[in-house]
Image 1 (cartoon, rainbow, N blue to C red):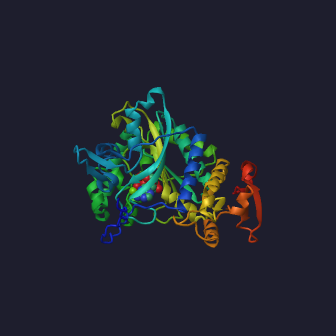
Image 2: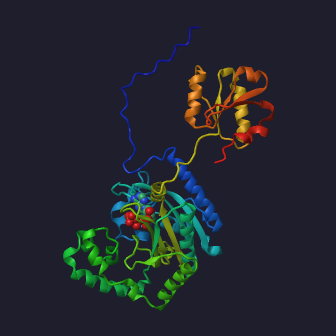
Image 3: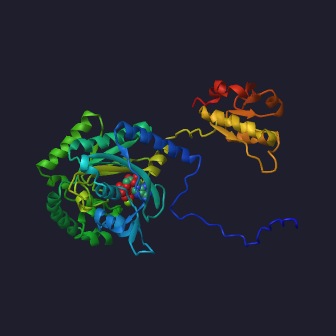
Length: 442
Ligand code: ATP
Ligand code: MG
């Protein structure tokens, strides 16, 4: 039999480097630690408010967003990633927001059958926007939604929940703006007055506003065009068109916020970007992030469930932008979260690996975070280079599995952070008794 031939690597031209899609970011260490921390804070807080988690598909039928968000909205007109399923021709869209899909799922699975529900979600959303600080094409939202209850107390509860979240995250400089969009009939009366006002100032309306003047004039109030701010500011206020019931609802929300010490200001121009809202709408805004200062927005959407084909039920919710919240946390000078392991295992000879890895498993079982030195395949590397890696890992201790110590059933524990390199030995037979002394107190 001939010697097996050593396989030759096929010769290929150097592949061109591929890069990610513009506006879609990789979230890498050490930044990802912030994300995990934020998500953990959110989970804890949602549990304290008895909100339950849902995880929904990222792709939905395009019709859901067109019908749910409204045809004459920024998202539906220009921001959706839509495509045709090549196999069956279905029209699909990468979700640009979470509420429509959540309502679709609630209707599809009859979740309101047993009464109202308090739900939350976290995940990526997709909008084709011009990428800039705080504005990406794949971004992430955390949303809280209460379905099946029409009372002002759930509007207020959602605002208290968001407000608590800012406290838990240590955010300062976040203010709350509030408005009421009333009911469809009240909006109808306001609409005529609004169109008349905008027509009077048609010289300053941009193309988009002119196009929306008769299809969706309320949308014009949401414009970001600075040239149109004064005409928007002098527009008739929807608040002045509200009937008794709508005003009572608005006042009830405010009374609960007042009683709980939540400060807010009324912004009569606040309309939000989707058509599904009615009654209470709100945004949490910071001045620390430049023009992308809205970190969270929401409101009541009592007519969306029936628009998606469900039995009419009231609902209210909000969504926050994770990237903007994290940016604000950074802006306010958080200390970078410590993601270093507690110990780094140094193994001078490969023969000691089985014992070393057994000890590491025992330490991890005790809650110690342990990083194993990994060699090049042929050798473990010199002690010097292993210590260098140990230092670089940020670990507080090095465990040195030297042959001499191992022969006596021991391992050396060396402090890496006190500058003196204090060293002691511990018994391999009694890991649980000394494991905790290695754990970080952070
Ligand atoms: P904006 O007016 O800034 O475009 P929006 O009204 O379109 O925001 P919503 O649809 O209300 O935003 O989404 C809720 C939150 O999600 C926003 O307040 C913001 O924090 C975040 N968000 C929205 N779009 C983006 C994006 N393209 N990139 C990053 N975060 C975003
Ligand atoms: Mg937008």
